[in-house]
Image 1: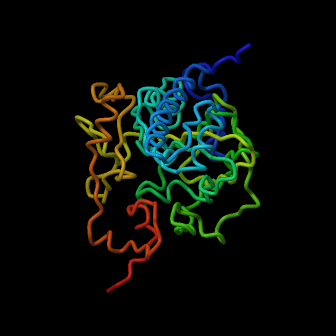
Image 2: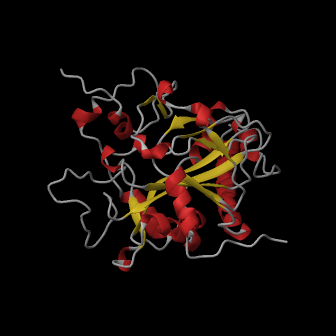
Image 3: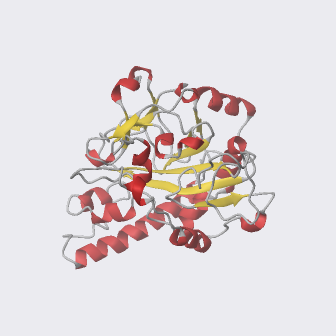
Length: 340
């Protein structure tokens, strides 16, 4: 017998109070099996294509199509990392994924916290955490560390949703409750340049708690909630997706026909809270004609978005000889501004 899906109309008052007090909230039964199955099918189709191409190029001994969704990518990655690199983070943008990002029950929840003029960010990440695969671990950080400091004191909602049951064994998130009311902690580039991490002496790991989330549910967090995820100790992949929402009153690069300013015009307002990626309007009472309603529009917004850090600012970001995956925009915030 299937569990009942959560009712529409967003969060209850006590849930909103808990979120603002603790800095997080687990929402159960947000999606149906059908909602998630279409996304899993879309991911599987992408893996099919990329694995077939790698097999034809002699990079794979098999496409491993006989293996289950929670095992196949592990077998592929033992022979080549090109497939996992091609599908991870924000690489995919198909109709089912867009449908999940803009699902009415999810937008109801986001509206409860961010308001009715709702922006989604294309800073969404698909994260397959492979068993005993170091690259799947994410160090302690706050999402605000990646954003413009102007947005630190506003809510940019992270929705972390697993495509399988997520628990301590397979790598659910750990977080530190009630730390979101403080300033953003100092961050630095981590050991291999793949993430920003909180400078270790500033994180109170003894206060951290694991937050298991069942498939169909979601974990909501503020942009200042410290969180991390560790090694997957099982033999199956922990698949998850994280999505971000904010109020349209915050800085945004979304195309709005008659935008409005959240602050007085003499404020030094950035282009967006995270300018490297495109924002898009997903719900609005004031400008419904600007809402992005299908995957074709969504893909066009992403493809046409342009951002380039000014050369004099980019020059401040020094990575030495290491490969650095963090966007220079985010690194800039934590790079000392040394006088010539």
